[in-house]
Length: 439
Image (cartoon, rainbow, N blue to C red):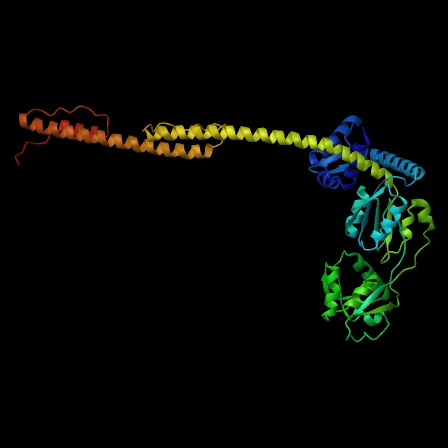
């Protein structure tokens, strides 16, 4: 039993679906199933009730999950304490943010103080951030709304004011500031639901008791100001975008009642805990940092997961080898099937209508063989009919000669049996020979 098995068990127990758990863990589903079965074998009892790919914890699994979670919490706490003791001398940190414009200077100044720390940064939606935090794919994430969930700690850092942007000839263009109630009737150009800024604006409208009237929704924030310039609505932007507003000859106004910002808390406790001094730098919007309490333990699990890639690679190589062997076997069977079909075809072409292609399960061309055999059977029947017709024709000619001879010599007609359907007629002629007459 190892940490990787326990981690896999924890995720499967949470999502209750093997395929979804495998996708979340970025491993092959058969490998995950094999790991869970090996864990159950080591424990000695089944931990899940299985219904296809959907599974649920049984009574043994629920008890075991409680102990696993305690184990991971203790491990995470130990990792955190060791990291605090070791300081920030080396290591890697995975960051995820909704907006990236404020991070370059911040990271540069931090790395001047700690050059051995390496950052991995990506941009994700709030939903993707939550998933990455829960799976340990990132260490910190920065977003504009709190992420409140068990196991995740968040802190408000700094604030930035949101501004209203209107066209130069708009009725509010001459104002320096306006209350949100004054803006409420206006059509708004805004990000689609799920965007970082969109969630804040929805909250502020709700706080003001106003209804948001949407003119256009889009996934491209850079295009919002172009829509305002075209007089298709008003928009909200953070203060850092004011320079761009001026470049487009648009007007920006402050918003009051409520003011589009929130007070920042004391950052000292967060700094004392995380020791990441760089968060004192200026940032845009209201940035909320979601800090995973088991940060460094998750980093260790990621390292274990990377080691497990070797096992996955071996599994993939084995599958590739089996697939290659299967292809070779299919090719062999195909070649054999073609040869059998060709042999049967040659026999039929040479007049052997009794020839048949084998219909065994080894012949993967059995459908073609079936059609060919049907054709051969029809040819054989036609050949038999043709032979019978020729035989009857010959018999009729012989019978005609016998009748003529019997008339000439004035002798009784003697006709042997032919074994065909002419026999009743021949018997009648024998019993009642035709009268002799002159033509």
